[in-house]
Length: 178
Picture 1 (cartoon, rainbow, N blue to C red):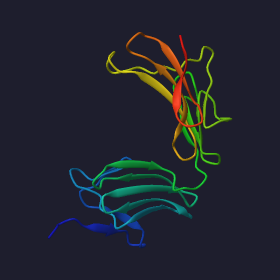
Picture 2 (spheres, helix red, strand yellow):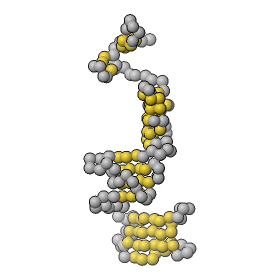
Picture 3 (tube, helix red, strand yellow):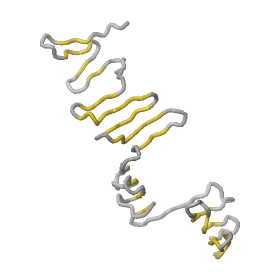
Picture 4 (cartoon, one colour):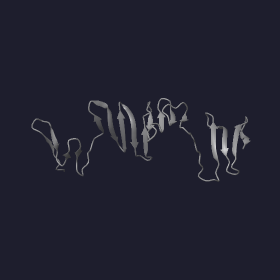
């Protein structure tokens, strides 16, 4: 057993827990732990809470599960619950370093209103594709809904050429080499 005691004042108000100290805003339990069943819920706002499950924690605000952390086989951090949840990463000089728009399934880098699937905005915008090994090609594929490649741009490792490949009706073939 435990010798921890919960104390109430004569008027029935909460008096304290033995072994706990407080400065009026924070309660410290020494080397002990705080144990909860499943939820820590915000008073007067029952759809805002922290929910503990087996190897998982979910943060919910306004009834929307905004963040779930799971350790089960493959550890995973999930933002949103398939609802209209935006995800924003702010840095020192940019409020929208990374912005995922829940309503459109679009990603913005440098802006919070992406117009396409991936929209990059900066004063001197650049995108870099870097190979792990110079013996490898760097490729940008353009594929149809079924996944078949219809065109590609390849940085050929052999001659350091830029190769444009297009679909000719039956296969993708080289159309231009620079």
